[in-house]
Length: 438
Image 1 (cartoon, one colour):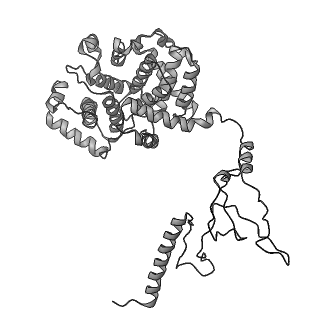
Image 2: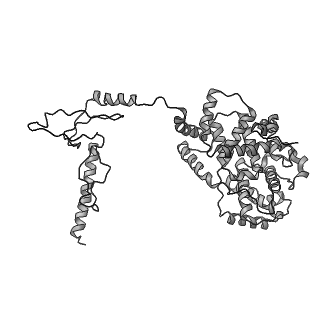
Image 3: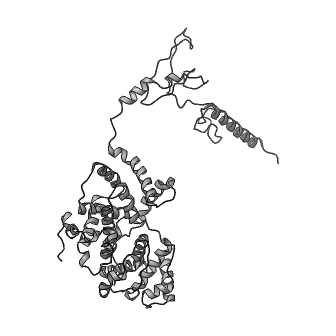
């Protein structure tokens, strides 16, 4: 096929541009702007030459009659507040026409360096250093906790967690009728029992107080419980369920969370036996399909437990501090008002309230680490205070409530008996609230 003259000219221009870029890359000088653009008008088209981007532009000098360009000593221009590499200038408009070798001893201008040091505002404050320190501490914390196999992408994943958590909250805390706060709390408490960290011997004395007594216990991870409660909160607002089918909905949410978080899953027959065979396998699988369609197969949740562990690792929290914060965070699962807050806010409020309850003696290193860790939490102080008040009231009456699974779970020696700490009864007083009457 014969090419027209315009097409041949365009091909030649492209070849010339490519050869020019290779030559400039070898010499070390390359203009970032496009050198040849066929779509630009003639008055806007940039000349095919290399600009000295690394040099400071000289003002055009007007020579008197009889003066020679080579014999004139150029005046030293005013240096900027940065290091400037000296380059030989053989033309007056700042265009590099040749490349001259430089002396190693005179690479950096002393005047520019002195001006740079004199203009420094002083030593940076901790607030200025927090972003860099936070990134390093987050990478170390995620690697130490085993949340990620490769530390290279730890910071990117953390930033994605901070962005995606905005999608994990509910617009309001209202429950659809005929459900109430008590009904929801009883179901969440029963899910905590069968989740796997409360043995039947621990809560057999309270079985008559539970609306859904259980006979089987699964050894699931903590992430499964948080995800199951989150799916339950969403499903209650998207699916029409009667009170008689509420237990079935809770088991299905726990089953879906286990499919996402666990390696070993229980059989469907075991789940039916868990509910004393009140529901058949067919009913359970049908409810599972309804939940998945209602949620549009979106099972993602940014866990507040992960934010708590990362923040606690950065803040150098003690074991008792961490267990107390985990106890307060899990108590928030029973509270309907907490569904509107961000996961990072729930974690930050739990750590702050645990710090006030334990009243551990601060250290200089600990205060610095806590300052860095506190920058993770987003939102207002009023939001954190509201969460702390909800958690404090829940902790003060946890030992007297009918829903005691979380209280018993954190009263063991493995959890350092944090739920039995005497200061929990007076936790609302730390926030200026009146303690509930027992």
